[in-house]
Image (cartoon, rainbow, N blue to C red; front, side, top):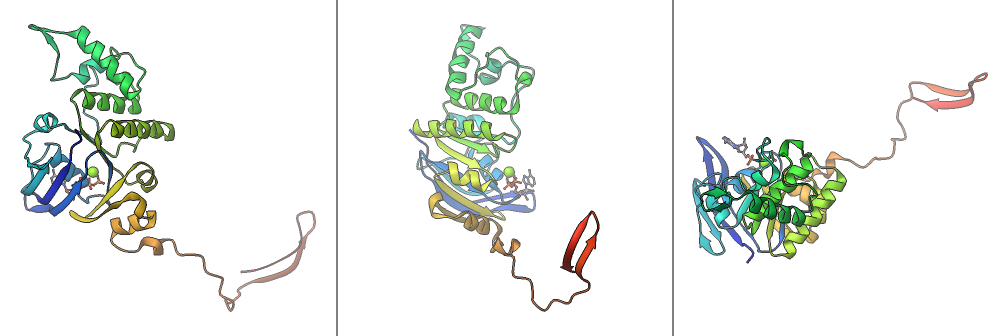
Length: 277
Ligand SMILES: Nc1ncnc2c1ncn2[C@@H]1O[C@H](COP(=O)(O)OP(=O)(O)OP(=O)(O)O)[C@@H](O)[C@H]1O
Ligand SMILES: [Mg+2]
């Protein structure tokens, strides 16, 4: 029931500008994939193509072995693929339940079935671990809670591949830990997850596999455990970045001395001090 994805030579042009230059890699089902890359590497663009927000200019995308092209996020959702944006997609003035079922309202005959939506929202909130009433307005929630509403919404659409774009950017450590526990739970229930992040320590702790992109190109894919953090950083940047933090060498022995102070005492303040500048 998990979703597997294969990108084959995906290109994307925005007008005259090519931002994806033929990207190919696979996402194995039922795993947590970290998608790494510096700003502008093309991570969001590629995931928007997967989730139906953009179309590729060329190339092929296989979902569970079948070539797919989604015209709009609803088509991707129907295939079980949901993207949670960097900036959320919630209607602030509506309630949690209304947001979860926005555009997918439950009906009893002609009428919107508020009671059924509230009931189901409550179950979804329990699943994601958000202790809030479904009638609370989204504008009264903190960011971490809004994110859980987004995940509840994705689950209500039967997401089998959930893409999270920089989900921890504004979370506290405790909120991040809760999110990771939820991601692990979703993986156990068969969901494939894509986690976009710059935070290599988090990528190390939560992902099974990593894919690195740079300048609109695929750079590397690996089991997370097989890569050191330094290697991930090098792949992202495209060169050895360890020289950004050179080790402290010993002070040169023959450095010229501009000022030498010996046996300096200032009564009541310092006594017998010596130093060189
Ligand atoms: N709608 C658009 N029109 C024109 N250029 C775009 C558009 N969307 C993205 N780009 C460009 O495509 C490139 C890739 O952007 P993208 O947002 O996919 O990168 P990213 O890896 O998600 O970066 P970040 O880590 O900053 O979120 C960037 O150079 C960006 O300016
Ligand atoms: Mg992005």
